[in-house]
Length: 445
Figure (spheres, rainbow, N blue to C red):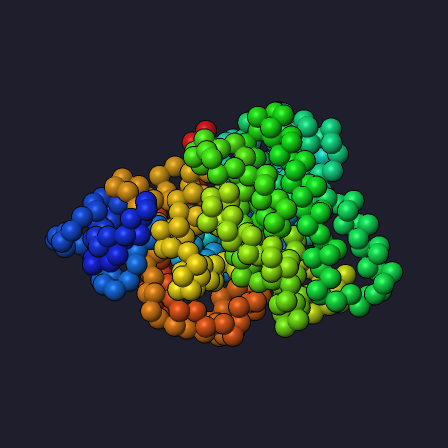
């Protein structure tokens, strides 16, 4: 394995920004210092004028393999990830077949070991009747248990209270939940179907999948977690109403109830349906501007612990259907870091806070071993970014297999120039080293 020296970069890490060199050997960070020697180094990366950060860890993606590979594969989406400075991902179980048996789980790990350019972990999916399988999952090499407490896209709805109580009371691993109340959504759907038939306007999506539906489900999940002392992580919070459920009074390492916000809920609001339509149809829904503003403030106030993408590609043909048929979800992982850096350029968030929420905190929250920080002895997962290198998202630079992005036409001020995954230079100014494979994430429990 080659020895890499990153020199002259501005290291953004653990709340500080300072010019440092970083020496990487055998996959790990051997030395952080000033004017480090280049003797014995195979590759020098001059990062002068750029920032150097820990690789982004995205705790919520849908890479569609196995079973839905016309939309995406672990290879294509991990490639898009590393181009965006994302070095590790945690993928969701609503593939085909669903990841609800240990056999199906290991099949995904085998695919990733052979094809993923980024480091990886996979959630195990809970259903109303697979508790015995849930309890067999090894917490040292699986990121968590996923429960869809709202059907979302796929067929993994867990809506039986007795089943939920059994899972929350028995499971010692982190439980990640998609929270939308199904009964509320169904009732709203009837109203809008009667009013509009098949031609429901896209802007009705946040009324159908309403803030009320989100709060009802999220508050129920929090109630269960408090009752049974469960480690609960609620994914993609989308409404102002839910913010009160989360505390900023406890250090993250001591929190048992945590939450995340996704890039699209910070970037888009209801007004954008007029131009974006189905391209920003997600579950939970992109909502009114006052929700968007409240979410951003809750992120800054540390009620939200991490930033993720919920990267969930569909083909443009699928997205071109009318409201009821068009699937929810969109591709984001290639552009999540540069989108958040755009907020930095606008003066809304600091570089240190972006790194905390996208790199450090996922590692703390999921108890990932030796990643998420630039520390001597840690695995070398690193992104280098030129903050002053504008570029525009266009079809020919979108790497998702679906080949579209809700950011198409957007000009970002920052560009990822290098990505190092587990000590190997995977991405260098648009050129990939296709021989690089990520590693399976390990967890402390």
